[in-house]
Amino acid sequence: MSKRYTLIALALFTITNICQAQEKRGRIRDFGIQIGILPTGANNAITDVVGVTVGQKTIIKGDSVRTGVTAIIPHQGNVFQQKLPAAVYVGNGFGKMMGISQIEELGNIETPILLTNTLNAPKVANGLIDFMLSLPGNENVRSVNSVVGETNDGGLNDIRGRHVESKDVLEAIKNAKSGKVEEGNVGAGTGTECLGFKGGIGTASRKLPESRGGYTVGVLVQTNFGGVLNINGAPVGRELHNYYMQEPKEAHKVDGSCMIIIATDAPLSARNLERLAKRSYIAFGNVGSFSSNGSGDYSIAFSTNPSNYIPHETKSIELKSNEVGNDFMSPLFMAVWEATEEAILNSMFMAEDMKGIKGRTVKAIPIKETLKILKKYNALDYDKLPKAVQK
Image (tube, rainbow, N blue to C red):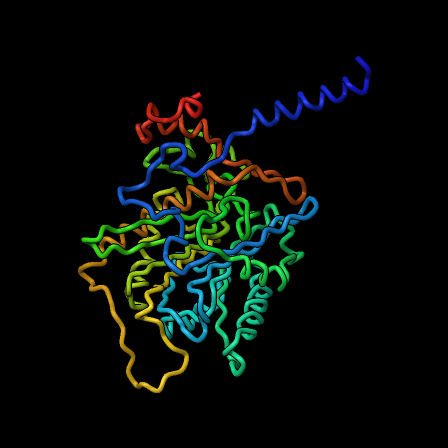
């Protein structure tokens, strides 16, 4: 055999071995992991809430740029002219979220919600303002409360380079669509880390039975925080020897932040949306986070119910609205807990190994090993999994 063909054969052999070594990624339900008891929406995503769309711009350049933008569009009209009830709950305030004070004061949002990295938040806000001012009907607008959340992806990304531009913001917004949502190393989750492994963008949803209102709750997360990974009660982080406070001291990242975006078609006031947002932190703790000192953890909740749209201008002194009564909020609380927990885990299971700035690599959660741990702690019905997954 000639030297040329020998090299070709060796290259093919190497590529084949690498492909075989890489684990097939998937959402947690692809591997028999189920969180809670409620059914999901059709796509098990925030886009199951009618009218909500998601767009993303992933920016990967050279060996050090690993970042992006994720845009959540609450409804398909002009959000400034038809605002939505909204609330923010702050788990730990070490963050640079923009637009929070007006949401807390007025109880509404008037722009899409954009996610990015810490130092790009002002640039993304500028791009979002450009977009809002350009919309038909906004020609006389002179004040826009842009809502931008962030996490610090500096462990893998050249964050000081501030590589997100206005054109990236516009691309993310204009690419927004309903249906399935990309997860893992995409958009604002491109360079993030979670509980010792690669984090990213994750989403999930829950559908209440008609007897409890038939409402949908959808959640999207940008995960970039530390702790000790726990799945359905199984101490996965401990078993995989990858957790905060491990000795001898390791490079486990504990600070970094998490953004949790909650959408629902239930008619809720800002007050009950804040109550809904608070419940997302049950999930945050369940997966092993404790909101470290340097973690900016924010939950933004909004209602898409058209009966509660808030017009920018009206001649009426009083506004009419519908609202789910306090005594009927518990099913929604349960739904947001389940959807948030699943979204966080989806962000990790869908992420892949990422090599970034200064050659640093963050590994994705090892799915095969994780499934064995879940079986060990009776947190997974392993025998019902496809045989290919059991191997």
